Image 1 (cartoon, rainbow, N blue to C red):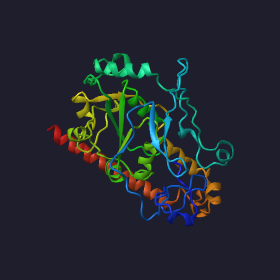
Image 2 (cartoon, rainbow, N blue to C red):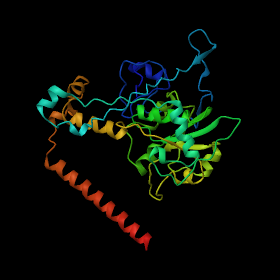
Image 3 (cartoon, rainbow, N blue to C red):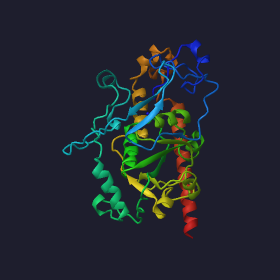
Image 4 (cartoon, rainbow, N blue to C red):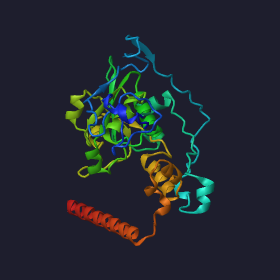
Length: 348
């Protein structure tokens, strides 16, 4: 999911919209010099960023190059699927040794070994049709809910929501499934705020503006909703005229609900999608942390003038580190015990 712009220091005052990091450092020097802003005044995020509902073509006005006219742009054609291909077993980064000279010199950070293949159009729509018919046996799931039939005579408005931190191809493939669920779909994508993420899950690595921008440039998204709620209710559906909510079928509990998507499932407004194995934001963060601990990024940090961040100077087994780990473990145990007590009281 990020490629920030890269200006010279003097140009930030002349261009009011930039993707500077949350720490106020200048971006890397390889991206365009357009759309820059001062780090102290991040750009405001619009309440809605819309694109035409058609998945094939759309028109965008271009200025500043002497043309001044609207140019017709065609989105890339879909990728053909080879039916014989399948995902290879993922190689998880837990197998990478920590802080050893051999791993630093020979291995490097763990690479992605699986070969994800996009689901065919027929497979995606067949999966959704079985949900409409209430059949889950062919997909190896038991569904207590059914998806209502789609409206006729107009594009189906489907909503997908999430954190979308470190936006990766698993996110993109989920949005692709939502977009191709029916012949004509207008896909709205909700991005939860930094505050909501920290309150219900954990603070994201990317800022809210960066995560919204990542979604805006995904070919499958037609509209970005930056004020997405953590739990969708009927008022949100009515406000944006949403027909369905698209997500995978796993249970996602929150503080007050056993499943934040139970409402959509119960009312027939849930369109199921399937997760892509061997990729997630948590997996990417794990690779980064393990790679850092093994010193794979020390040369880059030193080259960028950040010697104070070198992993070689960190004692991972120091008493301070051990004390912090024990405190985190104790807090997690206390939280689990409190949740168990609350559950026991509810059952009484």
